[in-house]
Image (cartoon, rainbow, N blue to C red; front, side, top):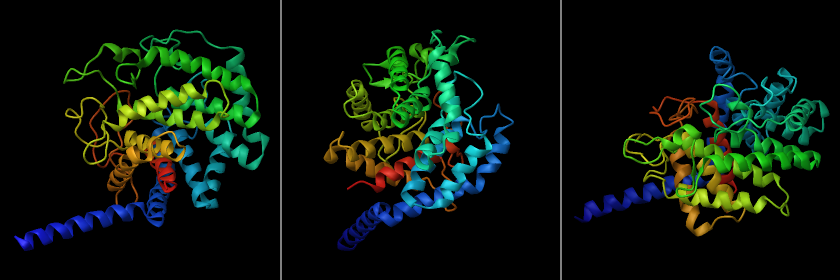
Length: 371
């Protein structure tokens, strides 16, 4: 019996040591570098393959746009010019232009990179195409229906919850960088329309789009997509970051963020992950790292900025970061990333994608700064 107890004690010590190692500053940096470098090594192949599928991985695509945000944060944290050179090269390849669709939220996501590069390097050529695009959209704004089932016009408004990551923070960044309030005023108005259309007050979660408001999971629960709500959480953090502290709508975004994160924190599984379906994990028992990455980012960001209780939420964030690290292959490939989609789907450990890497790097930067 004494031998068994001793073995159990050794196992617990080992587990605690492993957890501590994941949170060691050097270990966090090493983990992020491994994932970032794997991404850089495999990036061009993804762009080439992605071009076959409606440009889903073109340099300007939303998929890569979200990865660039994480890579930019990692570049700042690591202070390694290799990553800045990569990101500047992307902008130059596209002449710093957003995607081709004038109104589509996905096509302005890449502008978040351009805006931050401009803020860093003060080269107006990096931001002019973005501001031209935004000025056109504001001057010729759409009032189309947010019914995502319509074949025409649904992409002209933020009619799906993912859009709340892609576009609003771009407008908030533009307002912060230029000092022009038109951009954030437009963002506030459009965000409110999407919020009124897709937010479920009883669950404190967003439907992916209007089609899912009447659908149910196998267990009878409403369908709330993990990554869809991850997009919203990530977007809210960036919006709040880019609004002045005295801005009249900032408190609204903070309140929404806190409502959502409280709900989301309670949905973490025993291993530290979240699933592709937030309310029916039994149907999708495998981990999902793109949603988990955004939620980890949101949790750690909230603690670092004083919006969340350290005592209550820090253990959840730490557990989530440990879980994310367990999904990293030995070569740096991040597994368990649900492919492009709009609703919960099964995932395997070998599935990866750029937006999952972006979320991982965003999360790591915030975890690194936890006190």
